Amino acid sequence: MNYVLEVLPSLLDGAKMTLQIFCWTLIGSLPLGLIVGLALISRFRLLKAILRFYVWLMRGTPLLLQLIFVFYGLPLVGLTLGRFDAALFAFILNYTAYFAEIFRGGLQS
View 1 (cartoon, rainbow, N blue to C red):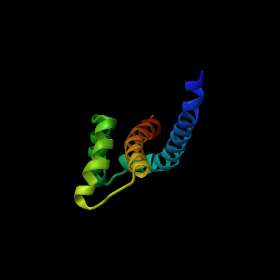
View 2: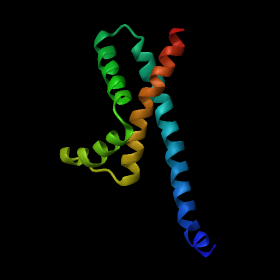
View 3: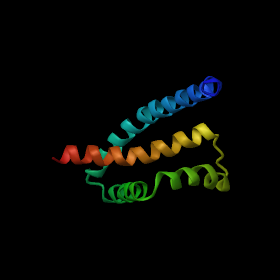
C-alpha cells in the first residue's frame, strides 16, 4: 500500500499529461481534418493528389514510427521540438488524416 501511495503522484501527473495531449490533439486535428476532407473532394487535382498521398502515408504507417520520426528526424533538418510538442505534432498529423477520411466519407454519402 505504501508503494501505491508513493507512485500515485507520478501516475496522476501522467494522467494529466495524457488528458492534455488528448484535448490539444482534438482541438488541432478536428478543424484540420475538416479542411483536408473538404479539399479531398475539391476539383483541384494537384491538391487532391498531395492530400491523398498525405492521408495514405499517415494512415499507412504506425503512429510510433511517426512519433520517432518527428522526435528524432526533424532535428536533422533543423527543427527541434520538446517531448510534449513533438508528441502533440505527431498526434495532430496522424489524427488529421483519419478525421479527413471520416469527413470526406460523410460529405460524399
